[in-house]
Image (tube, rainbow, N blue to C red):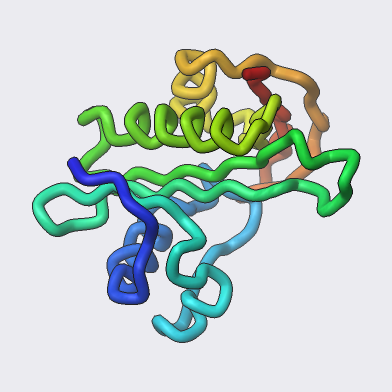
Length: 157
């Protein structure tokens, strides 16, 4: 497995992975990109970390400051996606280790995320990596006719 920054050539594979992973079970809003140019506009080369296995993009890690304020510079917000063909192969854990390495190198103290209450697999993954629930917005979304809570989780480094 190769962990590296994304390149422009990764756009098609990254877009395909995101279309597979971000569904009504994993995100409250539709994520769809019409083409590579649109994808690269939102996700320029080098803005994400990818896990590559046998020339294929197996996972994507995104991280950014959740609030562009000096008082919040110690925090990173994360998003992570692993291609269904590579789930349960350590890709997510390897990307999470890379995030921890990057965060420490950048003197970050906290990593936060949001996850749907119905996404039990993701909640278990984050908990396994030390994230703890910080809060919950009850009935925040209506997805497929059902109320779904928005859970906030974080880890302090």
